[in-house]
Amino acid sequence: MADAVRRSMTPEEFFDWQLGQDELYELVDGHPVPRHRMMTGASKQHDRATVNIIVRLGNQLRATPCRPMTADIAIRTSIKGLRRPDVMVECAPLIPDTYEVREPKLVVEVASPPPRRSSRRARWRSTSAIRRWPTSSSSRR
Image (cartoon, rainbow, N blue to C red; front, side):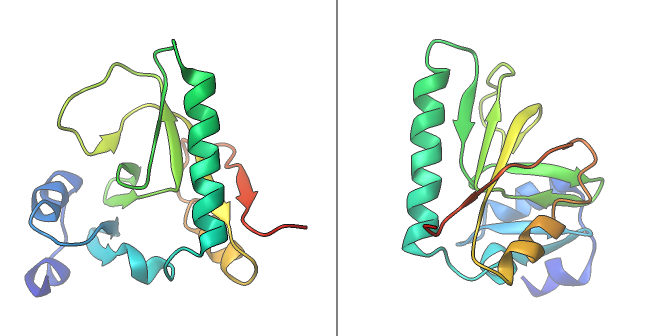
């Protein structure tokens, strides 16, 4: 990890490097950052909301070329940036052995109670391809 942090990586170099790691990372300005540092672990409410979204999307997308994806798949946010949102939908042909979504149709972040909500939204502002980013609250109101 120390060598990877010192030098800037391209997304392709990052994916090659990520294969040898025990945890998921995001690429921020060319440098790998452990995903758990971007946010603390998911609460049960957050996890339940994420699972519910994936199940509902999966049911609605059945018999279509679209499919939901989890935070195991990355999305490019810049030339040297990759993020891992909670849920994405892609409708492009499936390309085996890839680690990123190429044509996202939907990107969903499950919002946590403040103050984390604003910081999670801010991480997506650099993604010009995403015009809207729906959020789903993980807490009951």
